[in-house]
Image (cartoon, rainbow, N blue to C red):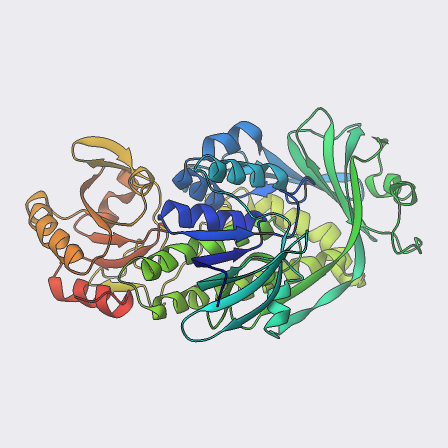
Length: 523
């Protein structure tokens, strides 16, 4: 017999596990959250918070705290052989695409504390100093044995387990899951320190050279920076000190800089690996436990947070609603292809930055900066760059939960993330994202007013019949950019802000089929 029971057990209280806890709490689902660490991460680690993550923070009600503690990076500068070659503007590059059209610099420890405080405010405790030991599972539940630092063991029975226990993931090893990929030959270092000299403190800088590179990112505090680079080949130590690195910095930067003593310094190898499936029975993998890749583009922490944002509404619908277990399987269907794409993209970028091949090095130093400088002059290129970097461009078109019913291929279709634009709902002006702050499904109905009113009663009765948490909103688009696109359409929007079902002529049967066949809701 298990010592305790919970609908969902989360193993790992890093950013991914904390976000999973916040999401489940948002949907009113009971859970346990454990971690072998004594408390939240204190090192800075990841720095970049992308726009899509900020949209999720806004849903949770913690976006203001993130903005207060972090700051917007206004641009990224590219230097080659010591000369400034290009600048990528980041301050409002995504204007009109997201309420957060920028890259926010906020170190991982601060993100974890924000999420921890959010849980604490709701009276939710985290089981620190509690390590995963073993598990057994069948078709109905998982039994996980855990142990605290004082030696006490407990067996927890749960319907589902979220494995957010990091790149070394004991849970992944316990299930003997493949983690395919490899490790780059180069060894890297990261240092948080003060740098005095001609480097802007509100912008990032990348310095490219024939051999090596350095990335400098501003951090909170006067002249406080994150420095990332390759450990020089002449350094033989497996665990080098910053002093062993320091002598190679001036030739790389080709300018006079004064480096203070690091507040934090470490060296590491970079891996690129991914599981074959995000699901093994009733155990669901997320974050670094599911995929690790190069730090190119600041995607790592954000990807883990968005993994569980995709997963937890599905778990909520299954645990405490009409959803079937098959709904949970769409987590792997939607997130695994993106993980593969991300690994491929970051791997190519990483290889190009590291290669010592003469032609590749020439392109990196002399061609690429010119291409970037030219490309950033065009709105289309800036838009695509932002959508990729911010992860707002991720789409689930063609997946099981994306059903179009006569929208004629308009730009906002099933599988798309809902953009943020002004609407009028119940004679109140707001934005689409304002309407998506509450948990559950939202139906934004841009049909003619008379038709939308007719739709409301039928939809509410249908949702009640199938126990689907849904709010219907008769909407008028106030944004000229989106008016012709959405007028006449009705959108069923998932709790993670993606269009699930879209139609130009709402009928009961197609929507019923979506509830029953896609969500698994019964009558």
